Length: 107
Image 1 (tube, rainbow, N blue to C red):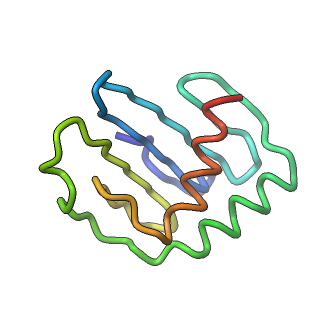
Image 2 (image 1 turned 90 degrees about the horizontal axis):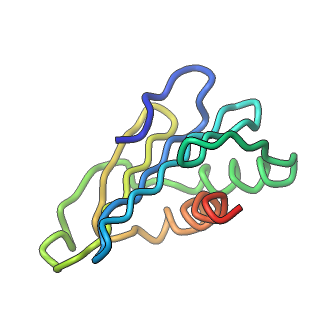
Image 3 (image 1 turned 180 degrees about the horizontal axis):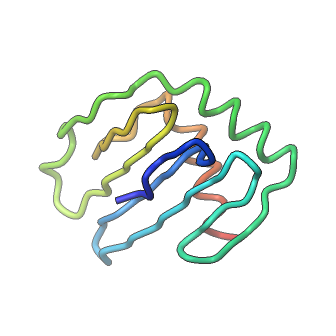
C-alpha cells in the first residue's frame, strides 16, 4: 500500500503483481523529494511540472476490480489529491502520470 498522503505528499503510487510478484513504490513530496523503493531521489523542476500536469489530468478516482481476473495481472494504486484508487486495468487518464512515476523507478 502506498504511503499515506498528507499535506507534504503530492502523490503515492504502487504497482504490484505480475509473474515475478513485482512491487514498486513511489512517494513524491511537494518539495520534489521522492522515496522510490526505499531510496531517496530529487526530481528536477521540469520533472515536477510534468508530473503535476499529468496528475491534473487524472479523473478516475474510484477503485475497480475490472481486469483482476487475469492471471499474473498488475495492480496499480494511486493516491493523489485526497483520493486513493486501486485498479488492475490502467485507466487512460492515469497513463501519463504512471509513466512518469515508473520512470523514477528506473533512475
